[in-house]
Length: 146
Image 1 (tube, one colour):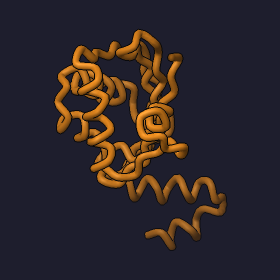
Image 2 (tube, helix red, strand yellow; image 1 turned 180 degrees about the horizontal axis):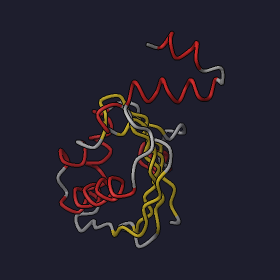
Image 3 (tube, one colour; image 1 turned 30 degrees about the vertical axis):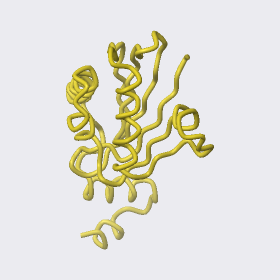
């Protein structure tokens, strides 16, 4: 099927789009699906249920956060295993037993959504999620006001 598409599509960007669509399903997430993911993600954090939180993430993950640098003195700021991600999230939950997030905005992109929410410290967080097969997060990047 990919060879047939190659013959029909000359633009590399379109080719990449069609191949990724075949591999992962629809790339454009509708707003309702994005909001459903966001609400479930926020609810899972507010429940402090580590397994429910992790259920949103693929086994192979790239997770970027300045808090990784702070907590692990890891200047790369990235976690690349779900085991380490569980440890990282568990540390955050243990440090803040009253942790609650408040969803403020959901933005939709191509195979990505951005959640803007009030974090446990009273600041704001923008978190970009990229999805892979099975609608699981394969890459996430967080930015904070404080």
